[in-house]
Image (cartoon, rainbow, N blue to C red; front, side, top):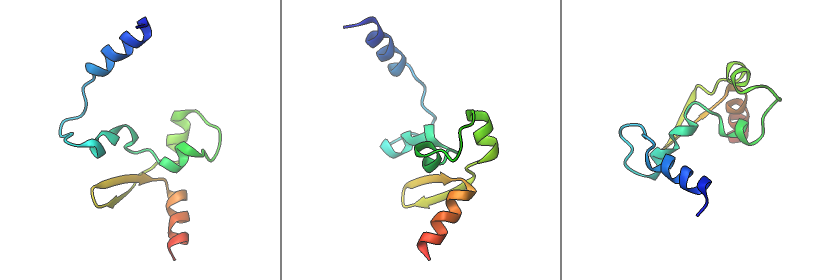
Length: 83
């Protein structure tokens, strides 16, 4: 087993996940306040800080137990598609 693998396994085993994680869907905390569409296809090439300032994903959408966030631009695109 490589040193990298041992190191990564050690970090993963000792990572503190947020309180309240009970099932797999709650482990999506890493994407909290991040628009999944922007992650997959960024609108423009900016640093992470600049991107989050220009396109904040503060629109919270709940579908059953799944919660995701969208930026204003992609929320408007979704509204147009749903009409």
